[in-house]
Length: 199
Image 1 (spheres, rainbow, N blue to C red):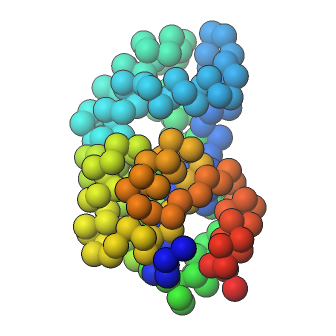
Image 2 (image 1 turned 120 degrees about the vertical axis):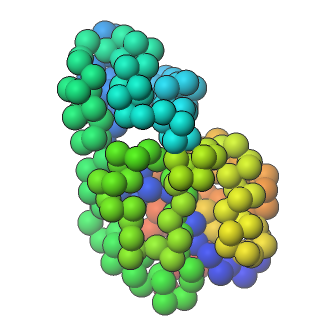
């Protein structure tokens, strides 16, 4: 592995506890398997448009409710949706602070205006915080990785990326990054240690 100078993290399911899939499953007329609901989420037209910053929260709610056949008002759904990402895993903020002593620390998240505001744009935790709704590009489309590499002004081989979606990890590897699929904070720490990035 090339000498790493940038650590790039997904947010939900990696640094922040995200209850979205379980909460969404409870709203569906018929529950789906974990794999099925993740796949449907990734293919959702409403989710993609919202995470690209192309539609407002109210339009997103209306389209999502229709697409997923959810029996909630738009306002009630948005209240539920806002609460899906909870808080940073215990120790995550401290881990980032320690890693910043040796690396540039950045995030790359498929996010939206509601969740980004909830966490105040993650200001102060990262050297640069990248979100799909601000870039108007989305993982795993390769354009978003090229844009991030350009803004970081480093070779992709000098970036190590961590995400809980295998498709996002595969896309990052195709661009030339070192990339690892991790589910939750404990797997993240183990992966960092395994790569010799966590002292």
